[in-house]
Length: 197
Image 1 (cartoon, rainbow, N blue to C red):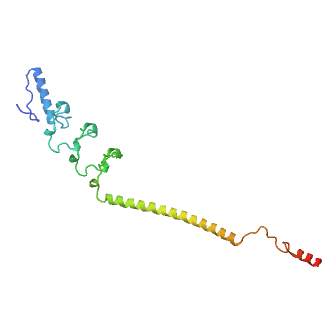
Image 2 (image 1 turned 120 degrees about the horizontal axis):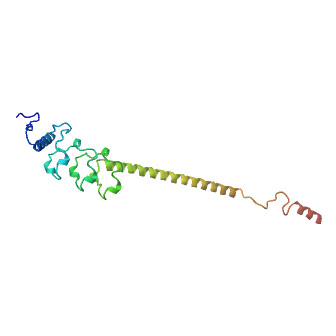
Image 3 (image 1 turned 180 degrees about the vertical axis):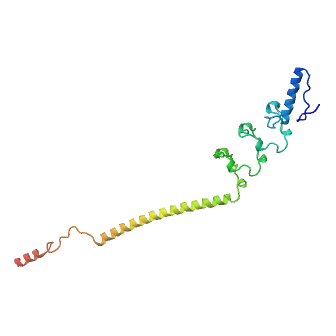
């Protein structure tokens, strides 16, 4: 009895009908497992044919599950156990800014004292210090300029007030000054004295 193209012997003829149907079903199943049946896409055993907890981490070879074999959106936060992804399991530089959603890391999500100087990149503190010094210098300069302007305005006003006071002292105004011989003891008094003599 010659084997078929898939290496399986054909179902013998003349057998019981039920036995023939059973053997054909077994043959089709083996062909699908081998990925030799059109429409199987070489996937072998489907997920419905694998018992729960059959495929464990111990039975998977290293690097056999790659990102090309994981469907989009199949690994979500709800499917990852707490503490499953630790810093030891994340490769260096694997989490970049392009892979973080907007506002994913906020101040509320950062624990107190989580960001230390050891976790900051080189020159971060020095650049922050330089930026802070520049802001302080700008603020102090602006404050000094404002105070200098106010003091100059106050000095100008004081000079004007002193000038007005000096002018009043040098040019006093007498409200009783009548001028000429109209004042007391003038020419009228002398004429009266000559007539009496």
